[in-house]
Length: 484
Image (cartoon, rainbow, N blue to C red):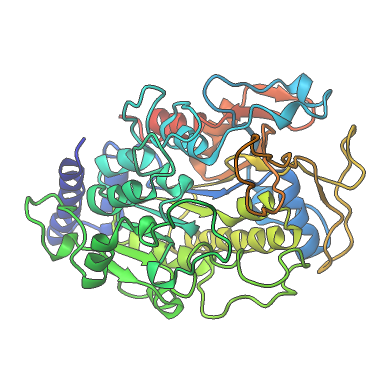
């Protein structure tokens, strides 16, 4: 369904609520009734993705935060199982995964294919955003939400047009087409909230750039024209579906930490894009200083919003819609820190993500309830093969060195250094990187409808227990929660 049609449905839903209020019908009853009018049994759906997070990433943060495992509130959700993440044509064999140490080092997905699978229920090839293996357009959860009159949003700690947020909004065969993806998200989609990094006014060219043309500092927000339109308050298509591009369709741009903090409470506009000032790539993960230091040894960059603050702001915008909303929140830099083997910064990023989960739970308890809201907490894939010291050929647990101490942890999926073929110029110096694995990732859910995911976990892993595939997230939402 086109953006105009989707927005028309949303506008009609809001007008129905207004009409009911005028007629003197109780708003709470009206809201509940609307939630059941073609919208299934969950008014709000919130998916929180710790990018690159496996079971040991969570344990590492818990050891540091609490001095024990199992410290995260979501680890005690009623639905707790595992999820496979492989891309189109791949698979996961539980027997081989635990009888061959190197098995999970191959067959891993990337964030684009993983986000597409979670958002559409369809496997695709690596690098593809919202399209199938032939380039055909797939329907996102976010688009289904718009079709039934809900508001929608994505929040990330990395660039707003990176693979995971893009994989819930856009349609593009190439995840690296950041400009095209950003322009689709900003100018063509019906989404109501976009928050992330990539602010071109804070771009700093790398000290040692690779050969070729320099990167476009505007690519993560589309282009210079889109960025200027955002700053002027004129960007955005006919989002509300009235056939006219008017003020209600335009994005309200926020940039500073105080902007995000102010937006967390009180009246809020219906459409907000937050492009974080002070930083360009990530909120904190790529700040200068010893990137292999223990957590928080290198002071955090000041005046930068946390993922928790961004999440609170997004919730305050989206809950304007009494018909409900869909929100995806990504801790995107967990993956980047894992690629670089930055154990301390992995823990920092995971803790920021954990705080954002706690903020969502607090919002549900104060503003909603678990009967009408579904919260999912998961990863899109594991990055780095994070294990305890002394692993390979066996799997050793992380070492708990007590609260506020870096756990004993090591990375076991290092990429081999790349050597250019004879006759080609040498590559610039690059830090060694770890890669994704095909390991199962944790999945947690809370809400009355979370039982559907527990029912879907019909496969069994000898170590991780019951699991399902990542395509089940969208399929359950499409077919059981927001069934037509």
